[in-house]
Every structure is written in C-alpha cells, then in structure tokens.
Amino acid sequence: MRPHRIEPLIEAEALAARVRDLAAQISADYQGRDLLIVGVLKGAFVFCADLLRNLHGVHTQVDFIACSSYGVATETSGVVRILKDLNAPVTDREVLLVEDIVDTGLTLQYLQAHLRQQNPRSLRTAVLLDKPYRRQVPVQVDYRGFEIPDLFVVGYGIDWAEHYRHLPYIGAVRFLD
Image (cartoon, rainbow, N blue to C red):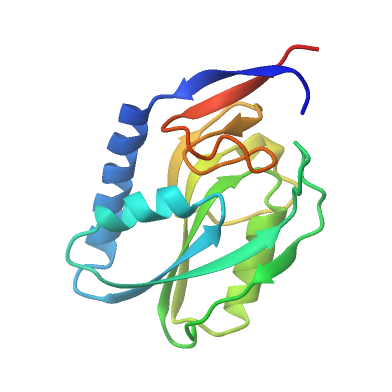
C-alpha cells in the first residue's frame, strides 16, 4: 500500500441519520409488502445491515451477491465478475439492490442487468455513496445516501485491499507520495 492517511469525510452520526432517512423512504414505498433485499458483498454489508435494522412494516428477506471490479486497485478495472450469485429466486419478486458506492456505473449496470434477466416484479437500487460525474454508463439510483467528490474512500464496510472496513465513518484516503 502506498503511504497514506485517512481523513474523515462523513462521520458515523451523519451516516446513521441518513440511513434512517433512507429506511423511512423505503419503508413507506414498500409498506406491508414482501421485499427481497440484495446486498452487494463485501462493501455494502454494513450499510445493508443498518438499512435493514431501520426498516419498519416491510416483510424482508435478505440475500447477497458478490462481484469484483476493483481487486486491490484504487480504480475500477471496468471488468465485472460475479463471485457469488444469489441463493433466493428473484422471479416475480420486489427486489432492492443495496450497493456501497456507484462511480463509473459499470458494476451497478451489470448487476441491474443480471437481476432483470431473472424477471423480478420490480427492481430498485439503494446506494450509500454516489459519484454521478464519474459515470461512464447510465444507471438508475432510486435511494441515494450521499453524493461525494472524486475521492478514494474507505470505511463503513468499504475497503482498500481488505483494509479499513471496520471504520465507523467514511474516510478519504490521502496519499502522501
């Protein structure tokens, strides 16, 4: 790893408040209905868990999908591979895809297309962090946590080469070289 320091960007309290707000919106949209929540591993697992704990009046089932487009790099490779697919069927179900960050849109576009091929009744997406100005492809984001500047970020489940997932806040990696 290059020499660096981590500077707080979004504090834990702000994350918790925004997750509560998103959960309230999702709860209102899916009140009394069945919802399959699909968390994207590994980065979205903390966001997904906190979102789930804050949903009210929604009948939920949770599943996970894992894909890779970063490896140990700080920039996406542009090549998306599914490493672990869903266990639960998606056909004719209302699905909420929960992602940590959308940048170029390539990973999210791939996952949305992958899920649409399985004919869900509906598919919406909740994203914790968004960098819309970095888009290379158009993607639909239905629930957005924060729009952030073009920084390399870690924490709250998001890693850099499997480090920093444990941080309770979102931090910006500042390189010292």
